[in-house]
Image (cartoon, rainbow, N blue to C red; front, side, top):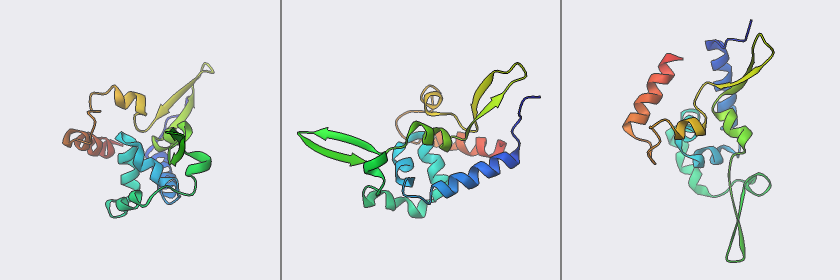
Amino acid sequence: PPFKAVYADYVVYEQHRHEFMNQPRARAALLHGGLVWRLALHSFGFDDLPSVLEGISREAVPYGLMLLINDQTYFDDELSEEEVDFMCGTYYSYNNDGTMDKVSWWPRPQAWAASGLNVGFWSTRCEEWFQKRLDNI
């Protein structure tokens, strides 16, 4: 039978996400915005939010975003596509016919962008949806 995720799987995912948010790359998750930002905040907590203003992490140069502006090179933290998928709780499920589905606990950025909730800021409606989704897991 195909894999069916259960609540215990979600708890393990959350533990791994919390651990990730204790790494220097946490700043990149907070800068990402949208649902990834909210998931990061859920792991990180509101009290630690100002740390995002402290500047780039030591991993920004090897793993982050490089910008060239007026012949000057700048770096900032940015998540890789794999890290974004990780933040959203993405996993692969094999079907009986041998095919594989890419599924996630939370909508990935493309789905979030098309959801109607992505209005450019985290609205009350976004938060209500997030809390309801959290309660339903």
